[in-house]
Amino acid sequence: MGIEEIINKYDRRNIAIATACSHSSLQIFNGARKEGFKSIGIAIREKPAFYDAFPLGRPDEFIVVDSYKKINEYAEKFYAKNAVIVPHGSFVEYMGADNFLKLEIPTFGNKAVLEWESDREKERQWLEGAGLKMPEIIEDARDINRPVIVKYYGAKGGRGFFIAKDYEDFKKKIDRSKPYIIQEFLIGTRYYIHFFYSPLKKDGYRVANGSLELLSIDRRDEANIDEAHRLGSISELEEMGIQPSFVVTGNTPIVMRESLLPKVFEMGKKVVEKSYELFGGIIGPFCLETVVTDELEIKVFEISARIVAGTNLYISGSPYADLIQPGLSTGQRIAQEIKMAIEEDALEEILT
Image (tube, rainbow, N blue to C red):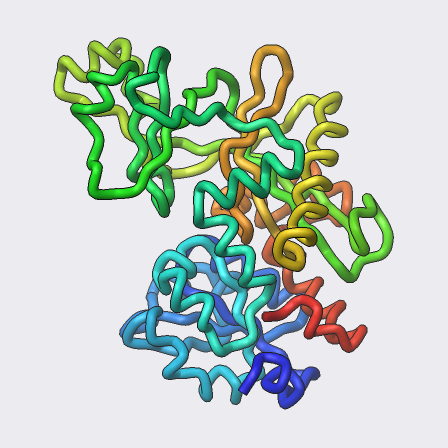
């Protein structure tokens, strides 16, 4: 049974919003509540107790599964609840890309984006094809003549990254059994820019057939790179047996200088327009992970094509979202898009 056929059998007056109990679930459940939807937490083996501490972020009910990879085995339970799944980074990571693409439950957004987001070469084709500036790729490790960052494919939350200053340093650290990419190490300020693209909204900043919104900006706290510098340079750290790492432990809020906002919107616009050309369009939240140089040039080193955890700072709204609607979170904006689709009989346009 196809997704469109499943959606046609749903009671659209009683749609429920479901997501995995992790990552950005609190704001997704809270946003569903604010827009009048029931919510469902997808939990492994037992209901997480910590939600009881947050009554406004607690799901109305839970569906407990043995494994995220086996969610399709519980599909009938989701159909009975008229459930729409909102994916987030951890949800996709826990399921695995292949399983996520085969998900048989209506899912917010275009699942086809995963192929272009998770493959480093396709991601570069998308972003560079959109005219965005990206870090230079070093094809041959023997050509490393300045600091580089090495990223293994599929590395999430900063795990699996390392810095190398030359070829000898690279050889000491690389695990050649994993596919990887070598990029120049960008010097600047890291800004994670959170957009929302609606194919349904017909006012605001018009892009393609819809509207692009800037909801928030954050930066990441990474262990141990953000604090280890207090002990000395990277070379000195390594001499002490400390290997700099980039594991994300939290996020901090950012307001960008206003003169850069036209560039930011132009970048988001180009990404959306190119996505329609490549795979039928990105839908909903996405994040451009950038570095702003001292020459005020914005370079993009990655895209996350769904809600990211940096939006958790803004459950009560950001300085940008407040200028759209006071107190608006990305979680609530997702619920609003689903509500708009129901009202316009257009669920098929935002679900896959």
